[in-house]
Image (cartoon, rainbow, N blue to C red; front, top):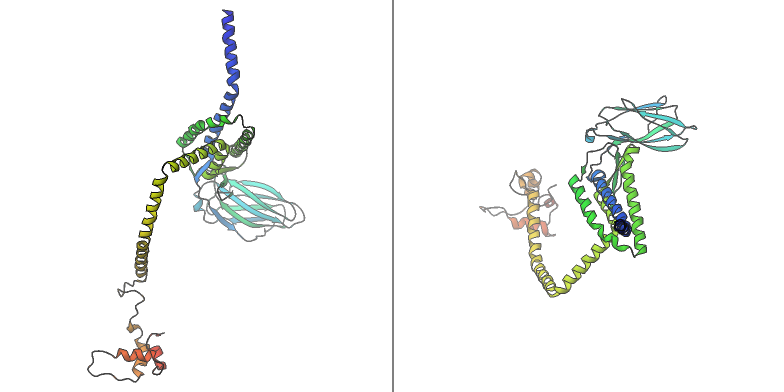
Length: 374
């Protein structure tokens, strides 16, 4: 009995010892997938409307060491948490202590050293309203306010890895639903399987560990920052995708390699069909591009005519009627000597055309009578 129990215990210990490294790695990957899903749910925005309203854009000097700034229309901020960005300069020979307060309470106090230009970021979690007043009170003169902005973001970046720094309690932004976050968690658990296949590649494993460490620290800072400061960092979906691509680099490489092999195999198996399709597509393009050009000309003409259409006359504005120039042009035409056939149905247009073109017959008065009515 004792020997049987001892055999079972030794078998259990051997099994655990054999699989324990893999279990530890699997647990780490589960934690990593959960961290990524949590960051996606709570710190990633699909769209964020950044608003900045300039309040002071020229240097202002305090009076008796204090200054009051009334805020303009802040309806674009939708009464949410407000970010305040100030730029101050101290020209005094001593350090100045300055307090910033709104209409309700003090927001912050800071010091500016001599000849220092300081940017100060403050967050009002309850928000500011139109007509509120910001008070800046110093312990002396010699300092000035160079710039003041209020908005819903302290700063942001552009490009593929874009992010935005917002006040701590900002919640109004388009975020991923909890269903999307749970779906990502499940997908990442499935994608962890290829990560176990790099045990024999030491350098790849080191790169993998380094990338996972860096991204995990970044996610940890983003998650913890609102707990220890008045700021919150939100990642864009593209920046989050870059982080996931770095963490799951072995999976990304394997997927890219498999996709390349599949496309190459498909091309090898259906080479003739692909070339026939490309030749047919090229022939279709050659046959239709002239028709497309003609159609584009017709569309351009119709659009141009519609833009110049005048509803008062029913014609385009390019057609000008003689009654607008009768007072200027008619006297000059009547003063030109010419012969008119009696009982003719109209004027002698050939005479006017020759008079306008022929240099031997051209009269200076015709310049105002034919096509230069200005």
